[in-house]
Length: 164
Image (tube, rainbow, N blue to C red; front, side, top):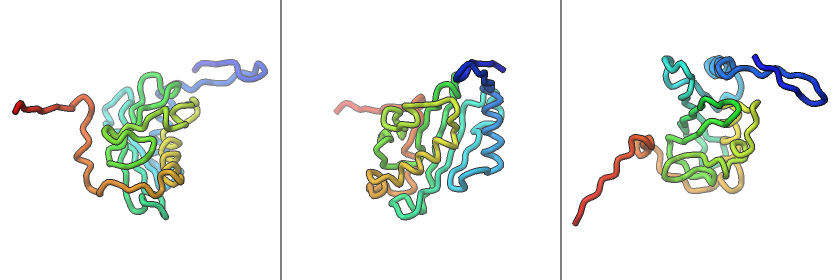
């Protein structure tokens, strides 16, 4: 564990990345916290604990009510000092989400733009749910349900063209 100097010369303990991710995994598996968001690892064999899946249940009194949104979160080796990348697998129309890729754009989502080490993946999911309720997103027309297969991993994207 590292020690850093805090305000007025006090020291604070910096929890190593893997310990932090193990804490988040335990919290996610036990379902502690907001019952409308959940998260866990994609692959139990991922020793670096990088690839995660999140779920958000759409908030009531919005166009998202009753919908279940699946997301991918990727925690690079710099997490939690740097934010994870976040991508909706389920198609959604929100002002902070790229419509083609489903990527949550950090420049349009303040929590990612102003990332703090103490933020967690659960915090991101809860904040995205709150963003669904914001005046600019709560009434936006949404794509039809059941169209998740339209999302393709960026590395697996194949372009087909033909010459006429």
